[in-house]
Length: 333
Image (cartoon, rainbow, N blue to C red; front, top):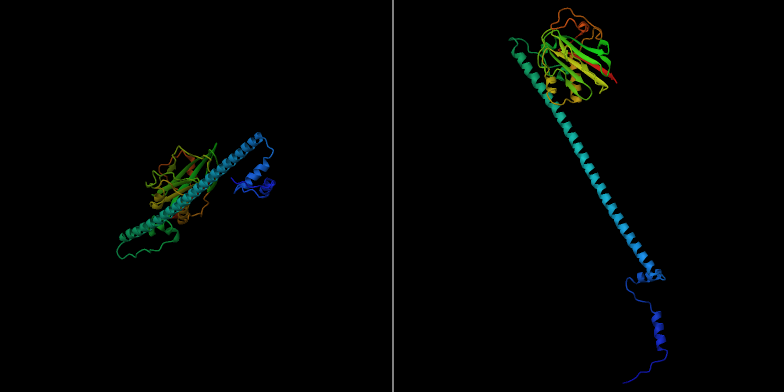
């Protein structure tokens, strides 16, 4: 065996070279170096506490992040549902407006057909050689269904109309604009001078009601008294609405537009107010006499109770082709 001589300071030189070369610790060497520097001089208990704190902090951050994410997801879902509900509401409103427009259009078409049928019937009953009536009609009459022929439209219609207001111990006749209190009582009186159809409509701003719906299609005889709700009963003001109104219509021919409007379950404010205005314009009530003062008319009235002194305070109104009288009530709580 051959022996090699090694210098005496070989070990010292090798160790010096090793210390001078930087340590190769790979990709995470810096972390190990930082950890050794940070934990230098720590006890095992300190290392354990630091590790537990780091793990708890990590768990807390993960939980908080998950909660935030779920919360954002819930908010997004609620916003989406709210947007969907708003779109559905807008679609329902648009559909409702379309149905209302369609109803108005069909009403106008039906009115035109009835006018045409009435003109044809009137022409068929005219004597031979008689001039045909003009097909043009006043604008106020064209807005509603014609309830009479042109000849009848020129005739005046007259009727006694009044509303009795019973407040406490005081009883009076209602004026065109009247102030009433919650709990007051009302009774409607109508006496047509000729055979007529009577319609009494109540409007409280929300609901529109034909008070005599059961008898509206029955013709009232000449001079017959119509009392609503009954000769010994009253309507009572409930105070739910600040404003109410009662409109009395009296026509020698049936008002098909009124019957058609109230044939449905719900009558809208827009449709009734439009029809009411057209009928009031068409009537053109004669106000040559003060309407808020009693005007006595000679002659007997059938079916009247002579013991009711209010009958002598009824006011007579006249109009073109029909009588339309509206009473507005301001309700005090």
